[in-house]
Length: 123
Image (cartoon, rainbow, N blue to C red; front, side, top):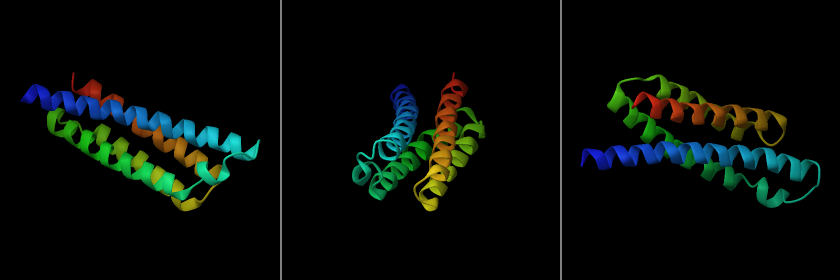
């Protein structure tokens, strides 16, 4: 039972890292495709994509990083992840453009790093 729980938690951290990477690619690629080529603005810049992505990041991040604190007792990854999630939320509030891209990239980088630290702290 405990082994299964740990495996699920580790998978959630892995999922968080993957989601962070996908978010960063979406942000950077979206800026290039829309800004430089004028392609895909309706789909890539849809507010729904950003809200769903943030919701997924919140659920995966808080669950896996929260379980990490319970397992290894280190709050650093949770604090770091929370800061990254706050930056991602701020990116949604500022609207499209360079400030959104900068906040998003900083946020997802912190969240991914928090998941990596969470995995390492559990070892």
